[in-house]
Image (cartoon, rainbow, N blue to C red; front, side):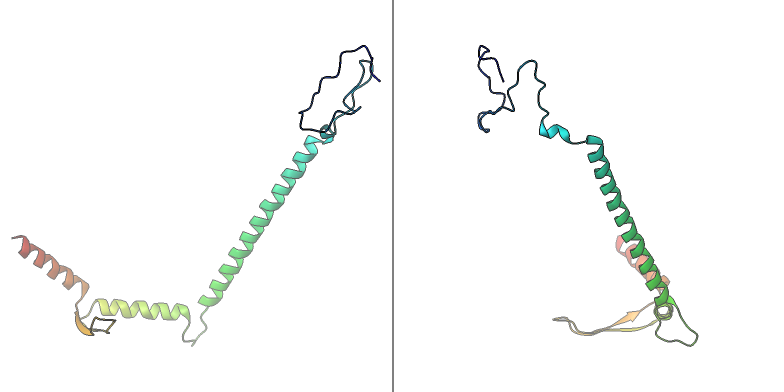
Length: 144
């Protein structure tokens, strides 16, 4: 296969690899053998990679769309109020808001229950505008 008078073969692979075989040696008139690693088609590999990436993107978008659809549908069902229905979240929220606005604009007593080492106590409730006026008056008196 090779000329016996040619210079000895110089290893082209790292010394830790298998010993050199006939695949590595060829004469000048022989066509070198094709390496096994060069058989892959780069465009095909890139196409598969891009295709798989697009599948993942589509799956994420579909999952997000399904989540948004389900969430908005469930919220819409929870906010539906039928005539004469009591205890619906939308009605309860309006009742709580109106009660808070009424309490905020009227005088009254608030009972604070005992928690831990702090005993129960009663507090006076003032309208918010009156509380602002009294607080400003107290700050003005302290500064002077």
